[in-house]
Length: 259
Image (cartoon, rainbow, N blue to C red; front, side, top):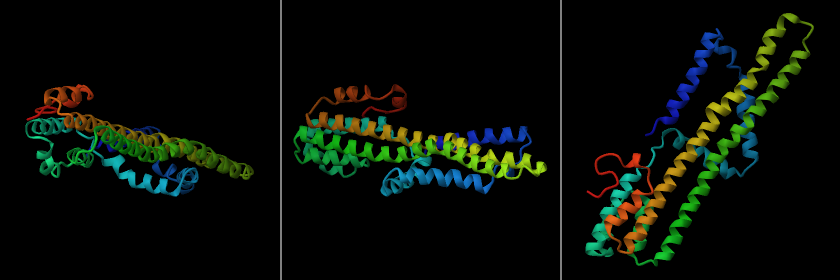
């Protein structure tokens, strides 16, 4: 589990709470049901209206991934491919059939099985590239959903503020209530900006980053499998794959190197 999102959200909301304490603003002053409802329900509704229902279902299912997903260890994937490549060169592709079932990465395992079955290299590349493209498209739907919510929320917050100000103008005859009413009116704008910048957009950015890392790992597996199928030198395979990964991901015992 990579707690980056949870830590970031805690820091962000912690800053808001600190400011409220410094300004002597009680939490109940901004936890008003009306403004919260119009911002969240409005943003969700507008985003759902702009897509297909299955997009919403997919985005909701992706939410836990944004909060708890672990970034893939590409260095470990490279080490696995080098080990497989070394054995394939010594014993042949068919010798990897039993080992292939023990590979934990679904994409790598399926590609390896296809290579063992004698799939033409060009066909294998097309098949795996199509699978990567499909994943990218699915992930784009998920993070695009939250990015859209981040775009709608501030404007919907303004709508809530305008509605509240209309109510304020209807009660100008009672000056003693104007201050609290005006303050409450701007809570909708606050929630629109806050939810967009501290919730929706960070979640969208997190899902996009995880998607980029996962697709990057799949591309490394693709290049490794094609090199393995071609019988390339394991050392050359390792150098080629390591060049596709930042050095910081290869630090540590055995990272990116065959045991």
